[in-house]
Amino acid sequence: YDYEDQYLAILSNKDYYDSFVREIHNIQQLNEIKIEDENLDKVFRRQLYIAVIGTLETFLSETFINQINENSEYFRNFVESFPQYSTQKILLKDIFDEYEKLKKTVQKAVLEVIYHNLDKVRNMYISTFGIEFPEISELSKAITIRHDFVHRNGKTKDGEELEVSPEIINNLKSTVIGFVEEISTSLKLRNCRVGKGE
Image (cartoon, rainbow, N blue to C red):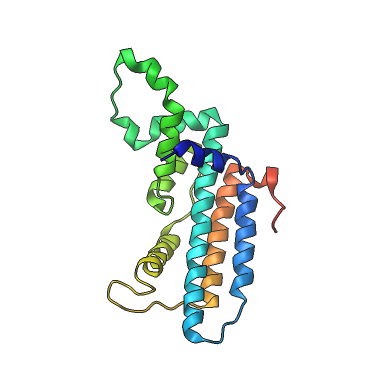
């Protein structure tokens, strides 16, 4: 698997905040479509719910990867605080080889992170960027629901069908927007590139 190609593809999008705004706007427009068939409507709303969480994951990953690539202090903070690296032993004779491979090692690590694991992502953002991270409890519940939509076709482990409606999607969208705005403000993302999708 070529991690470097995926990493470079993420770095090629410097407008990751604007991409989030555009995608949320597209989901909003889709959510306004009315489908008469009730079963088809449920399938459609489930996909929109999944898409909202997907925009959040994409924003969190693209923001993190771009920021540590552009800022050497953030890169160092990540290396010094990432739990997997704290137990890794390096022989002194190998230190230069390991240093030369460090960027590729970090690329692989950040691409393997599951960015809907908000507990882990929160710790990464706090220790790498030194910022406050928004409250995650409400979104963590939404991610569990998204998991049920993806893996159990909209049912809980107990077989109960989950409700989904345009209002529920709008509420989730508002929660995600507020979450992203807090992070964007802390990292001053909107000062540079905001405006292309609003």
